Image (cartoon, rainbow, N blue to C red; front, side, top):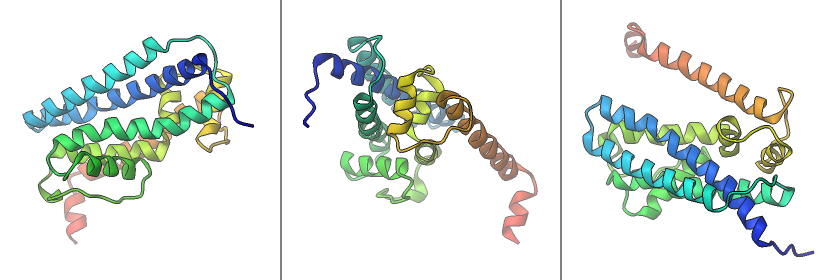
Length: 213
């Protein structure tokens, strides 16, 4: 049986894709702050432009496709699949601006490689890449490890039946907490706790001496 989507179906998918796009734009704030901290002014401008573009696209999708209808299974599967494509396209923008990629397609490959946590890279002269760009590469991989839908459920989607369908649409079915939104937030809490412990260990005074020995 071939499904024939109607206009309302496209609106539901577009609305939730907009939310996911906004979450990617919000994540760009972190490398933007790092660029300022390291006085990488050109990088900061690139991230500001990329962030503005991403948030604008997400806001337009959410507003134009605004609907109060919940996600059906077909919508959830479509959002889960398309969210990876959208995340790749917008996340590749600041990477392309870095000048370390031969084309936007190479930057898109890098972004998808990060979200898929495969570790493949097409970056040129990686040793001289700015700290903010390099951090964005690692942050993309970190977010990919959590799952793009988990990001949206954590920050932008309320606990509804549609949220559960989005969660399952990303090939997940485990629920640690009573509902999938709380589960998504718990996953982020554990991940951030581990990340903070690793950062604290890295920044500790004796860490460099231990690594050298």
